[in-house]
Image (cartoon, rainbow, N blue to C red; front, side):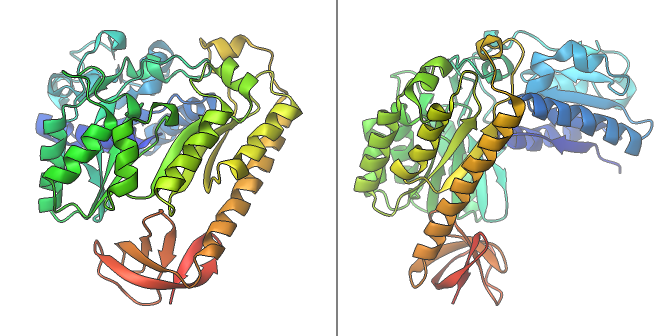
Length: 418
C-alpha cells in the first residue's frame, strides 16, 4: 500500500508532530499525498519550505500536496496561492484526527482549501498523541507548546499560540512506556520549556516535572531537557542539576545576544550579567556541565561594539555548542521595522561568531582526552557523552546501550574512543 510522503522542516517539536501526523494519516486511510510541515523561524526557512513544496510536487506528479506547520499558520493565504498546493492546514488542525479524516482520498475535494483557525484561542496541547520519537536510543517527548512572550524578532508565538502544558501525569506515563520499549534516554521538548506548568493547577515548574519523572520512572537512565530560558530556571531545576545524576549535564540556552542594549531591543527577559551568573552557578552545582546557546548575529541597530559583546559572551559563559542565526527580518514583527544592519555585515558577523564557536568546540574536545565517559550508542560505532559530544568507535557496540569508554583523542568535531 502506498503511504504519504512527509517532509519536515525546523525544530524537534515539528519533527515530533510529523511523527504524530504519520499515525493520523494512516488511521484516516490517507495515501498518495505529500505533506510538508513548515517552519517560520526565519524568512530563509519559509523560502526553503516553498522550494521543497515545488520539488516534491515535481517528484510526485498527481499527488495532492498538503502544507502545514508554523509558516502555514502565519502565511496561510500565500501558501494557498501556490499552484502546487492542494490544502493548507494550521498547527492546531494538523493534530486533530477529524482533519485527516477529511483529507482521505475520496474526500480530498470536499473540504475547504484553507483550514487555519485562530491559534491564540487554543488552550490544550496534543502531547498524548504519540509516545515520543527519535532514534532507537533517544526519544523526544513534547511537554509544552506555544509561547506567552513577545520577543521583537520572533514570529513563532503567532504560529504556535500561547503557552500550554502537557500534564505531568501524561508525561510520566509516556516516558514509562518509552523505557519499557527499551529507550535509555528521553529529551523533554517544547517551544518555551521553562514556562511549563504555568497553566496547570498549582502552577508547578519545570524543575518539579524533572523531579517527578526521575522519581516515578526509576528505570530511565538519562533525562535531558532541550532549550531553556535561563532567567526562568526555577529552584527545583537548579537543585536537580546539582544532585540528579540522571539529568544530563548539558543545557541549551536561549541567549540570543551578549549586549544589554540589543537584549532590551529584542525584548528579552535577561541581561548579559544574568546569563553569565546562571552559567557560573550551574557549573558550580555541576562542574561537568556544558552549554549550548542560540545567538543572533546582525540584529537591527547592532554595532560592532554590540557584536563584540556577543563574541565575549562565548568565553564568559564558557559556551561550547553554538547555534548561530544570521538575523532575518520576519514581516509583522517589531524588529522588522527597526534600522537594519547591512546584509554583508550580518553574514560576516555570523561567520566570525561561528569561528569562535568552532574554537570552543575544539577546546572542549581537546580537554576530554584521557577521560572516561559513559556513551549512549546511537549506531554501532557512534554515540554521545552525557555532555552530548559525539564519540566514534573503531568496533561495533550495542546500539541503544550505554557503554563505558576512555577518550583517546579527537578528530574534527567528534571524540575518538580508545
